[in-house]
Image (cartoon, rainbow over all chains, first blue to last red; front, side):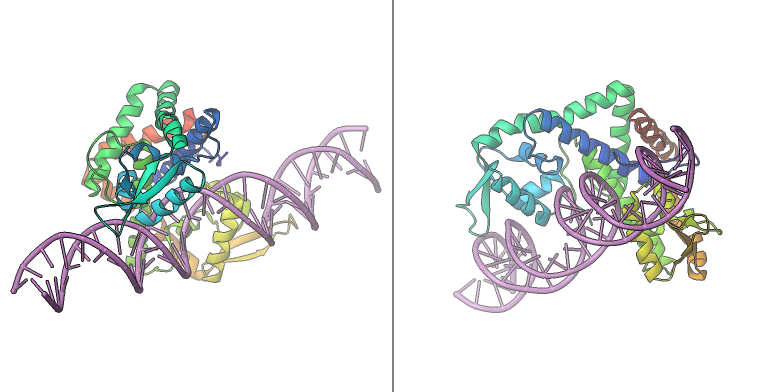
Amino acid sequence: MPVNIPKGAEPRISLMLRLLHDAYASAVDAELTAAGFADLSGGRAKVLPFVPEDGIPVGRLAMLAGVRKQTMAEMVGQLQRDGYLRSGSNPNDARSRLIFLTARGREARPAAMAAGDRVEEHWKELTTPHLVTRLRNDLAKLLDALGRSV
Amino acid sequence: MPVNIPKGAEPRISLMLRLLHDAYASAVDAELTAAGFADLSGGRAKVLPFVPEDGIPVGRLAMLAGVRKQTMAEMVGQLQRDGYLRSGSNPNDARSRLIFLTARGREARPAAMAAGDRVEEHWKELTTPHLVTRLRNDLAKLLDALGRSV
DNA sequence: GCTAGAATGACAGGGACCTGACCAATATGG
DNA sequence: CCATATTGGTCAGGTCCCTGTCATTCTAGC
């Protein structure tokens, strides 16, 4: 449980962003464990939804998931080791390899996709659907204003 | 520059929280560098505002800053190495040592406090003051609902 | 007084990200 | 058609934060 900060003066937005992000991540982990994929941590699980049947290169996957390609390469490596993904050669480009889902990966994918949804649903129950929707919109607007298209 | 994610379907709140947090952190770093404290990273800078004249133990500092005491111990170690903090013994408790600001620390403190404010100001200019305030409130409400008092 | 439990913090290790420097293969254009 | 830029990926290293475990010290209840 990641810290309780004392009631008092205005907390920094930065701190709240981090705490909320951490809360999200551990909630996703809990969902995945409950769904029988305990070895699929939140960080790695978010990769699966972006892997199409006909394969995808690592760099593209990184862009979709919003991380650097080095990070994605590491995640994909672990997911391969754990049997969720496999890689094959790319006939159109000898530099890159294509990443595919394995049978286990296909099994886990719906759970991975649902986990995030469940967390957001839970947040809506804890507060109001409106608040969560507004939060999402405000985050998106701010990121857009900062030059990160979302 | 931390990734541009493609316009498209709903981005996960989790992703936006992380991207925004990263944006905040690098903006703070930029402010601190501009203020002449290039060796003071955002992570460490947030410690200074919580160090009172009469000293404070590491664990308490951790609680105030919203991190684990191990993390704070590490940060304090670096800040000591870089001359922003010093530690003395605690007359009331032989287990703990008290952390104090050095002259350099006292110099840096206003900059550290201002940096976060400046970033939030900038965000208000980029969007609207109302949006940022609302975001802050919504984050606080959600954290509260999740059992993290803020 | 003395001992059970709480609190302070140190040590060891891990996870999810990042930047920078680099190589290999492809695409481009003069 | 060959020099150059671009793109796909890897290697090395760093940041910020976490958990778990352990020794030391303080504080109450008996």
